[in-house]
Structure formats: structure tokens, C-alpha cells
Length: 94
Image (cartoon, rainbow, N blue to C red; front, side, top):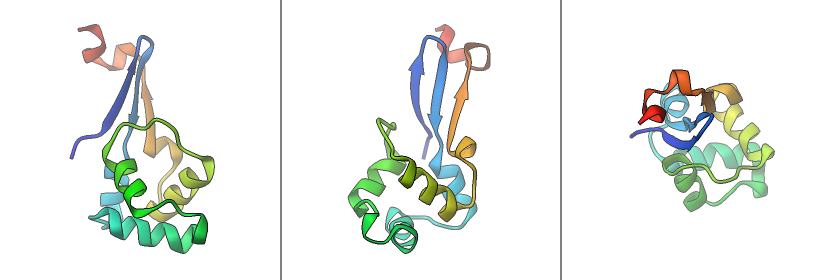
């Protein structure tokens, strides 16, 4: 599964939940959803939303969901959302 990228002239934002989720042994969106429900309760996004969140480019994300995701997969926001400038991204020059 590849990471999701959002390209801009000044670099690339990569949404990298797969790497963090794999580190804690969660293999499927349904497992991640169950963990998020245990942290957020009724405020957790639906299982379908979590599946899209993991596999598609990020359009928007609440800080509450980002924080819960961070707690569940035991990583920092910087691990989940990484910005690389043009010098770090050879594809941007193409």
C-alpha cells in the first residue's frame, strides 16, 4: 500500500498512516476503527471514513481525529503527516 501524496509547488505533503499502523500490528481499517472508538467513543468517524482516511489522499482532518489516530498508533503527527520540500522530492521537478 503506498502513501498518499498531495503535491504543491513548494513540496509534497505525505499522509503516511500505513507506516504507523503497521508498526502497532493493525492490518485492517476495521481494527483501526475499533481502536479509535475506544479512544473517541461516539465521536469516532465511521469505519468507511477510517478506511478512506487510510487509503486515499487527505483532504481534511480534525485535530481530534488526528490526535486519536496518533494515540492509537503510538506515533507523532509528524510521523503521520510529513512535508518534503522540492529538494527532497525529485518527482516535483518532473
